[in-house]
Image 1 (cartoon, rainbow, N blue to C red):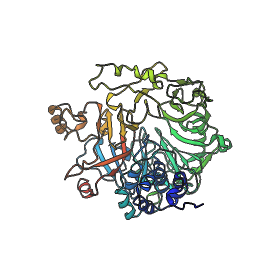
Image 2: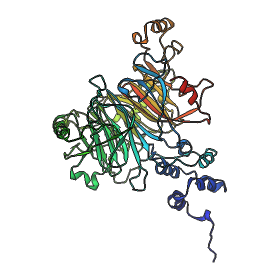
Image 3: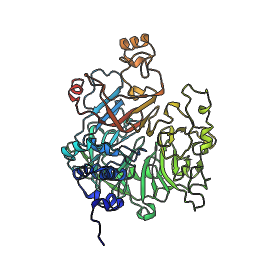
Image 4: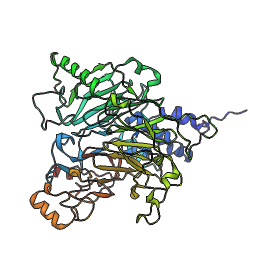
Length: 581
């Protein structure tokens, strides 16, 4: 009896799970050229998602992307960071501002030059900062491998959280801007032991362990490191980690870190939610006492070392407030658990002003309020939001009534909410795929509240949504970014109102207003709100022709926005960019 020795006869699961992950990218790409079988198998979704995590520390955890990972891998050796909006408190990290900018912001995307591969952005709130998670110091894939993969035709992938194994890559956090800019200026006589100290350009936070994920609130930030330690920054140079012994128990292993407006929180694998308030009551007193103690130590000011901030970490032994369990929830139409024992639990949370919105594994959306501090938090409770969860209720939304809107959006045939996001006053729950549904709520949303639906966002393959104070952004699977809301000193990124055609999105209402703004300064006039999501361009500095670019990540908060973008063209426009700075 003969035994087959053909490589093709190895089970596909063994190839994808055990063999292909060990191969260099170049060898994988050569395999795709062998035959149709390997061309298909080597383009597997899971494989390229895994390669992105291992080689670039990129998970796509903040999006609902379900395709295109091989393509993104081919370009991720040189992603571009674009920022725009309010420039106060150095939040954009731009050492030189475009010459044409007047007033308090930059109304179009500007590239932020960073000599590192950025894989995630997180924007802070009121006085603002944008933190950047970067790949470590390993060299990028060889140019030969990159060229080979660009010739491929298969694009696919899935989203996941970053792997916890030690084999994972190192990730560093960069920060720019100010944690607390309430004093209105950047004091020169204090170091990063002060919450008022400004990082005028991206600076690396030197931490004990690699950073896994990061989230920003109004005047603070929190992150999760590779050892599962949970850190909070109220000062860039003095982060503290929650050292309560109970947090080391396996059932409390964190899977998500999330900042609300004034609180931080984390979600455990079992679906429990813990919350703490760095600026309120008990914890604030503990932080202030520790800061006074550290101030008495020699060399405690935390001066920068080049472009790095040598952090002085410390432990805070306080148990965060544990939210009560979610209530019993009805089976949803799309659930496949009929006849099975249900284990409904939270799989995702999103924080905003004194509220958390949660999402279960079956697609239920819930909201918890009263999160002002640990005293009032005990008065809150989880409220199930059927209007955001159940297909029949979403289909009955007034926007789907024939004739209610010129676009006449089609109601979803099926529905399972897969992602939630929130910031300041609003939250958004959305499903994925070509028939994606985007539902908008706010702090006042109750179980009977009908969500707001924007017709232009329905059935558009939305994979990520970011929310600022008064503006929002939506990213689609084909790499297009759309913004809407208030002008907010340029946070929409639609272009210079002095140059845009009057009456178009982001422009002044008419020529008279534009002329008046040009003569008196734009601070005297503000373009009207943009109600219809409008595409953002990333080629404002190109003098030759429009550039084809692909946006794969977005963040927003306060009055500013940031995006990660890759070129779909080989040509570079750095000479055009430099001439405008």
